[in-house]
Length: 131
Image (tube, rainbow, N blue to C red):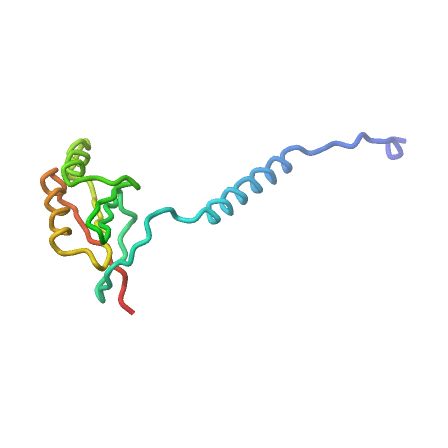
């Protein structure tokens, strides 16, 4: 007679939790793809020997008017040197300089000198790969 007994319906909670976590991860990944990379648009110089580097820890942007931007803040050379020197280990810090096409070589060397005065030894220059 047990065969004809009515059983209570049960809701299995573990598979539902798995599905909710999957949906959460899915929506987070989609949202991150929808957010554009913020930054300053500039036309980088082109090089036929450009190599892909890991994402820079500190990006210094040289604009065509001669101004310097670090983390969307305009800085002077002295402020840049002070910021880099204030880091715990400036010799291990990686700095990438991204300059517009119209930036003079003197401005580039001034920024490199400011980085070297702070003790930074790993300096790279950003460029686009030439077609």
